[in-house]
Image 1 (cartoon, helix red, strand yellow):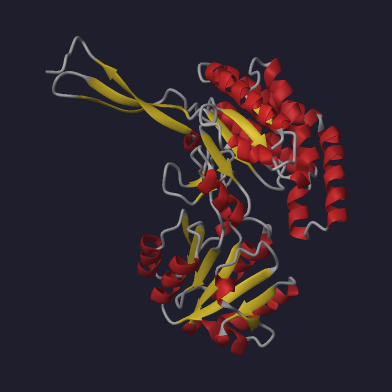
Image 2 (cartoon, one colour):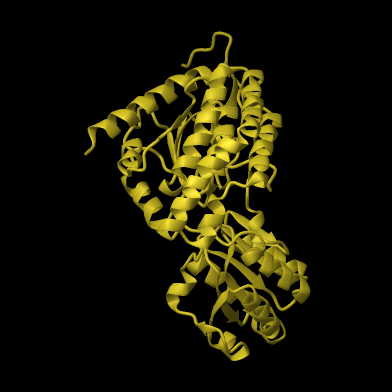
Amino acid sequence: MNQNIQELIQSQAKKAKSAMRVLSRSSADVRNQALLAMAESLQNSKDKIQAANRIDLDNGEKTGVPAPLMQRLLIDDQKIERMVDNLRQVAALPDPIGSIISMGERPNGLKIGTVRVPIGVVAVVYESRPDVTVEVSALCIKSGNGVILRGGSEAIYSNATLARILSDTAAAEGVRDAIQFVDTTDRQAVYELIRLPDYVDLVIPRGSNAFVQRLMRESDVPVLGHADGICHIYVDKAADLEMANNICMNAKVGYKVAVCNALETLLVHADTAEKFLPAFCERLQDSDVEIRGCQRTQQLYSPAKPATEEDWRTEYLDYILSIRVVNDIETAIDHIETYGSHHSDAIITESYSTAQRFLKEVDSAAVYVNASTVFTDGYEFGLGAEVGISTQKLHSRGPMGLEGLTTYKYIVYGDGQVRE
Protein backbone atom coordinates (compact mmCIF):
# COMPACT_ATOMS: atom_id res chain seq x y z
CA MET A 1 0.00 0.00 0.00
CA ASN A 2 1.27 3.47 -0.93
CA GLN A 3 1.05 5.60 2.23
CA ASN A 4 1.33 8.81 0.20
CA ILE A 5 -1.78 8.00 -1.85
CA GLN A 6 -3.72 7.11 1.28
CA GLU A 7 -2.80 10.42 2.90
CA LEU A 8 -3.54 12.34 -0.32
CA ILE A 9 -7.05 10.91 -0.65
CA GLN A 10 -7.87 11.45 3.01
CA SER A 11 -6.68 15.05 2.79
CA GLN A 12 -8.75 15.72 -0.33
CA ALA A 13 -11.82 14.09 1.18
CA LYS A 14 -11.52 16.23 4.32
CA LYS A 15 -11.18 19.38 2.23
CA ALA A 16 -14.22 18.45 0.15
CA LYS A 17 -16.26 17.79 3.30
CA SER A 18 -15.34 21.15 4.81
CA ALA A 19 -16.05 22.93 1.53
CA MET A 20 -19.41 21.21 1.21
CA ARG A 21 -20.54 22.56 4.59
CA VAL A 22 -19.86 26.09 3.39
CA LEU A 23 -21.22 25.51 -0.11
CA SER A 24 -24.48 23.96 1.12
CA ARG A 25 -25.23 27.15 3.06
CA SER A 26 -24.30 29.49 0.21
CA SER A 27 -26.85 31.41 -1.81
CA ALA A 28 -27.92 30.37 -5.28
CA ASP A 29 -26.40 33.62 -6.58
CA VAL A 30 -22.96 32.66 -5.26
CA ARG A 31 -23.11 29.20 -6.83
CA ASN A 32 -24.47 30.50 -10.13
CA GLN A 33 -21.82 33.22 -10.37
CA ALA A 34 -19.13 30.60 -9.82
CA LEU A 35 -20.55 28.51 -12.66
CA LEU A 36 -20.70 31.47 -15.05
CA ALA A 37 -17.13 32.41 -14.19
CA MET A 38 -16.04 28.81 -14.77
CA ALA A 39 -17.68 28.90 -18.21
CA GLU A 40 -15.78 32.08 -19.11
CA SER A 41 -12.50 30.60 -17.88
CA LEU A 42 -12.92 27.51 -20.04
CA GLN A 43 -13.67 29.65 -23.06
CA ASN A 44 -10.55 31.73 -22.45
CA SER A 45 -8.35 28.67 -21.86
CA LYS A 46 -9.09 26.78 -25.07
CA ASP A 47 -5.46 26.63 -26.21
CA LYS A 48 -4.24 25.35 -22.83
CA ILE A 49 -6.98 22.70 -22.70
CA GLN A 50 -6.34 21.47 -26.22
CA ALA A 51 -2.57 21.35 -25.67
CA ALA A 52 -3.10 19.04 -22.69
CA ASN A 53 -5.58 17.00 -24.68
CA ARG A 54 -3.04 16.60 -27.47
CA ILE A 55 -0.70 14.85 -25.03
CA ASP A 56 -3.45 12.39 -24.09
CA LEU A 57 -4.31 11.79 -27.75
CA ASP A 58 -0.67 11.18 -28.65
CA ASN A 59 -0.32 8.74 -25.76
CA GLY A 60 -3.53 7.03 -26.82
CA GLU A 61 -2.24 6.52 -30.34
CA LYS A 62 1.01 5.05 -29.00
CA THR A 63 -0.76 2.63 -26.65
CA GLY A 64 -3.40 1.56 -29.16
CA VAL A 65 -6.52 3.06 -27.58
CA PRO A 66 -9.46 1.95 -29.83
CA ALA A 67 -10.81 4.53 -32.28
CA PRO A 68 -14.25 4.89 -30.60
CA LEU A 69 -12.55 5.69 -27.28
CA MET A 70 -10.20 8.13 -28.99
CA GLN A 71 -13.29 9.90 -30.28
CA ARG A 72 -14.55 10.29 -26.71
CA LEU A 73 -11.16 11.54 -25.59
CA LEU A 74 -10.88 14.29 -28.21
CA ILE A 75 -11.54 17.88 -27.09
CA ASP A 76 -12.20 19.89 -30.24
CA ASP A 77 -13.65 23.41 -30.48
CA GLN A 78 -17.19 22.05 -30.60
CA LYS A 79 -16.71 20.04 -27.41
CA ILE A 80 -15.32 23.05 -25.56
CA GLU A 81 -18.34 25.10 -26.64
CA ARG A 82 -20.60 22.35 -25.35
CA MET A 83 -18.76 22.35 -22.02
CA VAL A 84 -19.23 26.11 -21.79
CA ASP A 85 -22.91 25.79 -22.71
CA ASN A 86 -23.40 23.08 -20.07
CA LEU A 87 -22.02 25.31 -17.34
CA ARG A 88 -24.28 28.18 -18.37
CA GLN A 89 -27.31 25.93 -18.68
CA VAL A 90 -26.76 24.50 -15.21
CA ALA A 91 -26.39 28.03 -13.82
CA ALA A 92 -29.76 28.91 -15.36
CA LEU A 93 -31.57 25.94 -13.82
CA PRO A 94 -33.75 26.44 -10.71
CA ASP A 95 -31.92 26.08 -7.41
CA PRO A 96 -32.71 22.61 -6.03
CA ILE A 97 -31.46 23.33 -2.52
CA GLY A 98 -34.02 24.37 0.08
CA SER A 99 -37.04 23.71 -2.12
CA ILE A 100 -40.04 22.33 -0.25
CA ILE A 101 -41.02 18.90 -1.55
CA SER A 102 -44.08 18.46 0.65
CA MET A 103 -45.80 20.05 3.64
CA GLY A 104 -48.81 18.87 5.61
CA GLU A 105 -50.46 19.26 8.99
CA ARG A 106 -51.12 16.42 11.45
CA PRO A 107 -54.25 16.22 13.63
CA ASN A 108 -52.18 17.39 16.62
CA GLY A 109 -51.20 20.57 14.80
CA LEU A 110 -47.65 19.59 13.86
CA LYS A 111 -46.69 20.86 10.42
CA ILE A 112 -44.39 18.25 8.82
CA GLY A 113 -42.64 18.70 5.51
CA THR A 114 -39.65 17.63 3.48
CA VAL A 115 -37.01 19.95 2.05
CA ARG A 116 -34.35 19.19 -0.55
CA VAL A 117 -30.72 19.18 0.66
CA PRO A 118 -27.32 18.20 -0.82
CA ILE A 119 -26.09 14.63 -0.50
CA GLY A 120 -22.70 15.80 0.79
CA VAL A 121 -19.45 14.74 -0.87
CA VAL A 122 -19.73 12.85 -4.15
CA ALA A 123 -16.80 10.88 -5.56
CA VAL A 124 -17.04 10.26 -9.31
CA VAL A 125 -14.78 7.69 -10.99
CA TYR A 126 -14.94 7.87 -14.77
CA GLU A 127 -13.31 6.86 -18.05
CA SER A 128 -11.99 8.57 -21.19
CA ARG A 129 -14.42 11.49 -21.37
CA PRO A 130 -12.84 14.75 -20.21
CA ASP A 131 -16.16 16.56 -20.56
CA VAL A 132 -17.38 14.55 -17.55
CA THR A 133 -14.99 16.64 -15.44
CA VAL A 134 -16.95 19.74 -16.38
CA GLU A 135 -20.45 18.26 -16.25
CA VAL A 136 -19.97 16.71 -12.82
CA SER A 137 -18.30 19.79 -11.35
CA ALA A 138 -21.14 21.99 -12.59
CA LEU A 139 -23.88 19.82 -11.14
CA CYS A 140 -22.15 19.35 -7.81
CA ILE A 141 -21.47 23.07 -7.33
CA LYS A 142 -25.06 23.95 -8.26
CA SER A 143 -26.50 21.32 -5.90
CA GLY A 144 -24.26 22.29 -2.98
CA ASN A 145 -22.13 19.14 -2.99
CA GLY A 146 -18.40 18.75 -2.70
CA VAL A 147 -16.93 16.58 -5.46
CA ILE A 148 -13.87 14.37 -5.77
CA LEU A 149 -12.98 13.58 -9.38
CA ARG A 150 -10.92 10.59 -10.45
CA GLY A 151 -10.70 10.30 -14.23
CA GLY A 152 -9.21 7.58 -16.40
CA SER A 153 -5.47 7.33 -17.00
CA GLU A 154 -5.91 7.87 -20.76
CA ALA A 155 -7.26 11.40 -20.08
CA ILE A 156 -5.07 12.40 -17.14
CA TYR A 157 -3.59 15.56 -18.71
CA SER A 158 -6.92 16.78 -20.10
CA ASN A 159 -8.77 16.14 -16.84
CA ALA A 160 -6.08 17.68 -14.65
CA THR A 161 -6.04 20.85 -16.75
CA LEU A 162 -9.83 21.18 -16.79
CA ALA A 163 -10.13 20.51 -13.06
CA ARG A 164 -7.43 23.07 -12.23
CA ILE A 165 -9.14 25.76 -14.29
CA LEU A 166 -12.53 25.02 -12.74
CA SER A 167 -11.23 24.77 -9.17
CA ASP A 168 -9.12 27.94 -9.36
CA THR A 169 -11.99 29.91 -10.87
CA ALA A 170 -14.48 28.65 -8.30
CA ALA A 171 -12.07 29.56 -5.49
CA ALA A 172 -11.75 33.09 -6.85
CA GLU A 173 -15.55 33.33 -6.65
CA GLY A 174 -15.60 32.18 -3.01
CA VAL A 175 -16.20 28.48 -3.65
CA ARG A 176 -12.91 27.08 -2.36
CA ASP A 177 -11.92 23.38 -2.27
CA ALA A 178 -15.32 22.10 -3.42
CA ILE A 179 -13.72 20.54 -6.54
CA GLN A 180 -10.98 18.03 -5.73
CA PHE A 181 -9.14 16.22 -8.52
CA VAL A 182 -7.20 13.02 -7.83
CA ASP A 183 -4.06 13.64 -9.86
CA THR A 184 -2.78 10.07 -9.95
CA THR A 185 -3.49 7.09 -12.19
CA ASP A 186 -2.82 4.60 -9.39
CA ARG A 187 -5.97 2.54 -8.80
CA GLN A 188 -5.26 2.48 -5.09
CA ALA A 189 -6.73 5.99 -5.02
CA VAL A 190 -10.14 4.62 -6.00
CA TYR A 191 -10.09 1.98 -3.29
CA GLU A 192 -9.08 4.56 -0.70
CA LEU A 193 -12.05 6.72 -1.70
CA ILE A 194 -14.57 3.93 -1.18
CA ARG A 195 -13.27 3.32 2.35
CA LEU A 196 -13.98 6.82 3.69
CA PRO A 197 -17.65 6.81 4.77
CA ASP A 198 -16.96 9.60 7.29
CA TYR A 199 -16.08 11.97 4.46
CA VAL A 200 -17.53 10.57 1.22
CA ASP A 201 -21.31 10.16 1.00
CA LEU A 202 -21.76 8.68 -2.48
CA VAL A 203 -19.57 7.04 -5.13
CA ILE A 204 -20.65 7.20 -8.78
CA PRO A 205 -18.51 4.92 -10.99
CA ARG A 206 -18.51 5.12 -14.77
CA GLY A 207 -16.48 2.34 -16.32
CA SER A 208 -16.37 -1.34 -17.21
CA ASN A 209 -18.88 -3.80 -15.84
CA ALA A 210 -16.21 -5.70 -13.89
CA PHE A 211 -14.88 -2.50 -12.34
CA VAL A 212 -18.30 -1.17 -11.29
CA GLN A 213 -19.34 -4.53 -9.84
CA ARG A 214 -16.14 -4.72 -7.82
CA LEU A 215 -16.73 -1.27 -6.36
CA MET A 216 -20.28 -2.23 -5.44
CA ARG A 217 -19.01 -5.31 -3.61
CA GLU A 218 -16.12 -3.68 -1.77
CA SER A 219 -17.25 -0.13 -1.04
CA ASP A 220 -17.99 1.12 2.48
CA VAL A 221 -19.74 4.06 0.80
CA PRO A 222 -23.05 3.81 -1.13
CA VAL A 223 -22.40 3.24 -4.85
CA LEU A 224 -24.76 4.46 -7.55
CA GLY A 225 -24.27 3.78 -11.23
CA HIS A 226 -24.76 1.41 -14.11
CA ALA A 227 -22.61 -1.58 -14.91
CA ASP A 228 -23.47 -2.02 -18.60
CA GLY A 229 -25.34 -0.32 -21.42
CA ILE A 230 -26.83 -3.21 -23.36
CA CYS A 231 -29.51 -1.26 -25.23
CA HIS A 232 -32.12 -2.83 -27.51
CA ILE A 233 -34.46 -1.68 -30.25
CA TYR A 234 -37.42 -3.87 -31.19
CA VAL A 235 -38.79 -3.36 -34.71
CA ASP A 236 -42.42 -4.45 -34.45
CA LYS A 237 -44.56 -5.92 -37.22
CA ALA A 238 -46.47 -2.63 -37.25
CA ALA A 239 -43.34 -0.50 -37.64
CA ASP A 240 -42.81 2.22 -40.21
CA LEU A 241 -39.77 0.61 -41.84
CA GLU A 242 -38.19 3.82 -43.10
CA MET A 243 -38.45 5.26 -39.61
CA ALA A 244 -37.05 2.06 -38.14
CA ASN A 245 -34.12 2.12 -40.54
CA ASN A 246 -33.20 5.69 -39.68
CA ILE A 247 -33.64 5.29 -35.92
CA CYS A 248 -31.62 2.08 -35.74
CA MET A 249 -28.78 3.56 -37.80
CA ASN A 250 -28.72 6.63 -35.59
CA ALA A 251 -28.72 4.54 -32.43
CA LYS A 252 -25.78 2.48 -33.65
CA VAL A 253 -23.52 4.80 -35.64
CA GLY A 254 -25.29 8.13 -36.14
CA TYR A 255 -24.13 9.72 -32.89
CA LYS A 256 -21.23 7.87 -31.25
CA VAL A 257 -20.43 4.17 -31.11
CA ALA A 258 -18.63 3.95 -27.76
CA VAL A 259 -21.40 5.33 -25.57
CA CYS A 260 -23.57 3.52 -23.06
CA ASN A 261 -26.84 4.46 -24.78
CA ALA A 262 -25.87 3.12 -28.23
CA LEU A 263 -27.75 0.21 -29.79
CA GLU A 264 -26.12 -3.17 -29.11
CA THR A 265 -28.88 -5.68 -29.94
CA LEU A 266 -31.60 -5.32 -32.58
CA LEU A 267 -34.76 -7.42 -32.31
CA VAL A 268 -36.98 -7.69 -35.40
CA HIS A 269 -40.46 -9.23 -35.68
CA ALA A 270 -40.53 -12.24 -38.00
CA ASP A 271 -43.28 -10.69 -40.15
CA THR A 272 -41.06 -7.66 -40.77
CA ALA A 273 -37.63 -9.26 -41.01
CA GLU A 274 -37.61 -10.12 -44.72
CA LYS A 275 -38.70 -6.63 -45.73
CA PHE A 276 -36.45 -4.83 -43.28
CA LEU A 277 -33.20 -6.65 -42.58
CA PRO A 278 -31.49 -7.04 -45.99
CA ALA A 279 -31.52 -3.33 -46.82
CA PHE A 280 -30.76 -2.31 -43.25
CA CYS A 281 -27.82 -4.70 -43.01
CA GLU A 282 -26.41 -3.27 -46.24
CA ARG A 283 -26.47 0.18 -44.64
CA LEU A 284 -24.71 -1.21 -41.59
CA GLN A 285 -22.05 -2.81 -43.75
CA ASP A 286 -21.52 0.49 -45.56
CA SER A 287 -20.74 1.96 -42.13
CA ASP A 288 -18.28 -0.86 -41.37
CA VAL A 289 -20.52 -2.47 -38.76
CA GLU A 290 -19.97 -6.17 -38.16
CA ILE A 291 -23.25 -8.08 -37.93
CA ARG A 292 -23.73 -11.07 -35.65
CA GLY A 293 -27.11 -12.67 -36.12
CA CYS A 294 -29.40 -15.53 -35.29
CA GLN A 295 -29.99 -18.27 -37.87
CA ARG A 296 -32.85 -16.39 -39.53
CA THR A 297 -30.75 -13.23 -39.75
CA GLN A 298 -27.99 -15.19 -41.47
CA GLN A 299 -30.52 -16.60 -43.96
CA LEU A 300 -31.68 -13.10 -44.84
CA TYR A 301 -28.19 -11.59 -44.91
CA SER A 302 -25.43 -14.10 -45.63
CA PRO A 303 -22.43 -11.95 -44.55
CA ALA A 304 -23.77 -11.98 -40.97
CA LYS A 305 -21.68 -14.00 -38.52
CA PRO A 306 -23.39 -16.43 -36.12
CA ALA A 307 -24.39 -14.79 -32.84
CA THR A 308 -23.50 -16.64 -29.65
CA GLU A 309 -25.15 -16.58 -26.25
CA GLU A 310 -22.37 -14.26 -25.13
CA ASP A 311 -23.21 -11.75 -27.87
CA TRP A 312 -26.65 -11.13 -26.39
CA ARG A 313 -24.96 -10.24 -23.07
CA THR A 314 -22.27 -7.97 -24.50
CA GLU A 315 -21.94 -4.20 -24.53
CA TYR A 316 -19.67 -3.86 -27.56
CA LEU A 317 -18.96 -0.13 -27.54
CA ASP A 318 -17.72 -0.82 -31.05
CA TYR A 319 -18.81 -1.28 -34.67
CA ILE A 320 -20.60 -4.56 -33.91
CA LEU A 321 -24.35 -5.24 -33.75
CA SER A 322 -26.15 -8.43 -32.77
CA ILE A 323 -29.51 -9.11 -34.45
CA ARG A 324 -32.25 -11.56 -33.53
CA VAL A 325 -35.54 -12.28 -35.31
CA VAL A 326 -38.40 -12.93 -32.88
CA ASN A 327 -41.92 -14.26 -33.39
CA ASP A 328 -43.79 -11.80 -31.18
CA ILE A 329 -43.53 -8.97 -28.69
CA GLU A 330 -43.54 -11.43 -25.78
CA THR A 331 -40.29 -12.95 -27.02
CA ALA A 332 -38.79 -9.50 -27.59
CA ILE A 333 -39.61 -8.35 -24.06
CA ASP A 334 -38.40 -11.63 -22.59
CA HIS A 335 -35.09 -11.23 -24.45
CA ILE A 336 -34.65 -7.70 -23.12
CA GLU A 337 -35.41 -8.77 -19.56
CA THR A 338 -33.07 -11.77 -19.83
CA TYR A 339 -30.06 -10.13 -21.46
CA GLY A 340 -30.54 -6.39 -21.01
CA SER A 341 -28.97 -4.07 -18.47
CA HIS A 342 -32.10 -1.99 -17.70
CA HIS A 343 -30.55 1.08 -19.32
CA SER A 344 -32.40 2.22 -22.47
CA ASP A 345 -34.65 0.19 -24.77
CA ALA A 346 -36.94 1.20 -27.63
CA ILE A 347 -39.79 -0.07 -29.78
CA ILE A 348 -40.58 1.06 -33.32
CA THR A 349 -44.28 0.59 -33.99
CA GLU A 350 -47.39 2.35 -35.26
CA SER A 351 -49.58 0.31 -32.89
CA TYR A 352 -50.64 2.28 -29.81
CA SER A 353 -51.55 -0.81 -27.80
CA THR A 354 -48.26 -2.55 -28.60
CA ALA A 355 -46.33 0.57 -27.67
CA GLN A 356 -48.16 0.87 -24.36
CA ARG A 357 -47.47 -2.75 -23.55
CA PHE A 358 -43.76 -2.27 -24.25
CA LEU A 359 -43.64 0.83 -22.05
CA LYS A 360 -45.37 -1.01 -19.23
CA GLU A 361 -43.48 -4.30 -19.33
CA VAL A 362 -39.89 -3.30 -20.13
CA ASP A 363 -38.22 -2.53 -16.81
CA SER A 364 -35.50 -0.11 -17.90
CA ALA A 365 -34.44 3.34 -16.75
CA ALA A 366 -35.55 4.83 -20.10
CA VAL A 367 -38.07 3.23 -22.45
CA TYR A 368 -38.74 4.76 -25.89
CA VAL A 369 -41.40 4.61 -28.56
CA ASN A 370 -40.28 5.58 -32.07
CA ALA A 371 -37.07 7.35 -31.02
CA SER A 372 -33.37 6.60 -30.75
CA THR A 373 -31.91 5.34 -27.49
CA VAL A 374 -29.01 7.80 -27.69
CA PHE A 375 -31.27 10.51 -26.27
CA THR A 376 -30.72 9.04 -22.80
CA ASP A 377 -28.51 11.86 -21.68
CA GLY A 378 -28.84 14.62 -19.11
CA TYR A 379 -28.26 17.32 -21.72
CA GLU A 380 -30.94 15.91 -24.04
CA PHE A 381 -33.39 15.35 -21.15
CA GLY A 382 -33.19 19.03 -20.21
CA LEU A 383 -31.19 18.41 -17.03
CA GLY A 384 -28.33 20.64 -18.19
CA ALA A 385 -25.81 17.84 -17.71
CA GLU A 386 -25.52 14.54 -15.86
CA VAL A 387 -23.18 12.84 -13.42
CA GLY A 388 -24.08 9.45 -14.84
CA ILE A 389 -26.95 7.19 -15.81
CA SER A 390 -28.26 4.99 -13.05
CA THR A 391 -29.80 1.61 -13.83
CA GLN A 392 -30.54 1.08 -10.14
CA LYS A 393 -33.91 1.88 -8.59
CA LEU A 394 -32.69 3.67 -5.46
CA HIS A 395 -32.29 6.55 -5.02
CA SER A 396 -32.09 7.88 -8.57
CA ARG A 397 -32.78 6.28 -11.94
CA GLY A 398 -31.84 7.21 -15.49
CA PRO A 399 -29.79 10.35 -16.24
CA MET A 400 -28.79 11.89 -12.91
CA GLY A 401 -29.06 15.65 -12.94
CA LEU A 402 -29.44 18.10 -10.08
CA GLU A 403 -32.28 16.30 -8.34
CA GLY A 404 -30.32 13.04 -8.39
CA LEU A 405 -27.57 14.77 -6.40
CA THR A 406 -29.92 15.74 -3.59
CA THR A 407 -31.74 14.00 -0.80
CA TYR A 408 -34.27 15.38 1.68
CA LYS A 409 -34.74 16.00 5.35
CA TYR A 410 -37.89 16.40 7.40
CA ILE A 411 -38.73 19.76 8.90
CA VAL A 412 -41.30 19.91 11.70
CA TYR A 413 -43.06 23.03 13.03
CA GLY A 414 -44.84 22.87 16.36
CA ASP A 415 -46.31 25.17 18.98
CA GLY A 416 -45.56 23.24 22.14
CA GLN A 417 -46.70 19.70 21.27
CA VAL A 418 -45.44 16.82 23.45
CA ARG A 419 -46.02 13.12 22.82
CA GLU A 420 -48.17 11.27 25.33
